[in-house]
Amino acid sequence: MFKSLISDKRLTGHILALITITVWGSTFITTKMLLSELTPVQIMLCRFAIAYVVLWLIRPKFDKTTAKDELLFLAMGVFGCTVYFIAENTALKYTLASNVSIIVASAPIITALLAHFFIKGEKLNKNIAYGFIVAFAGVILVVFNGQFVLKLNPAGDALSLGAAVSWAIYSVILRTCVDKFNSVMLTRKLMFYGFVTAFPIALIQGDKMPFEVFSKPDMLFCILFLGVIGSGICYVFWNKAISALGVVTTNNYIYINPFVTLVTGGIFLKEPITAMGVIGAVMIISGVVIASKKKIEKV
Image (cartoon, rainbow, N blue to C red; front, side, top):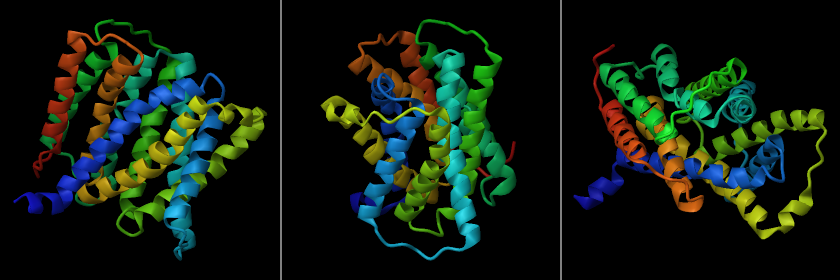
């Protein structure tokens, strides 16, 4: 029985999605540290470049692709890397972090809506809708964690929504490619085009890369963690999870992101975890379970 569980493709997909979202939820600590020395675009370029090199070392083979394939890879690099990260990081300049966290957490339901129309076999159903309501309510409780502070800012909130929509578009495009190409190669393409499209932005901003920063052990660790694990390995895991579970079910794990951030913030930054945060965490997990249940019935 144990052997059959290990070989189960869906179980592997759930494990990979959970590992990935746990890492992504903890990357805010390393990113926060790096922001004291680097700009958001510089961090992006470093993590994309490192991820590309690592993935090339893992699989140096260059697969034969068509012009159409390369356009799809370019679109994934733009929406899944450059636009997503720039929109999210820029939003933090204009609005509260809580606003950004909540709005970006709408990405799974936006993905489900797009997938309903553009991906065969990824139809909306009542479980997805109910799971979204429960998990999203939990996200709100976790983000506020006992301190309700809500201040609307049109520019920042619009950028946050743009990040969520960008991730949803990336996810739908990825679903069309993930079973056709090797996951390592696909992620390597994503990082390549993410770097290529982010580089002109760095040139426009005119900020010189302070390479001396990486002589500091803590800064070097942070950028390697983001590049090797956060961008390289985790994107590969995410691709495999989508292949096993589908884009809607896999993206439901994004709801867990604020919970992971809450826990890691409590451990490493000594930020308090309130009863409201714990209740929210339970609701998030419940919502993910509800939304992940297979049901053909449509909303």
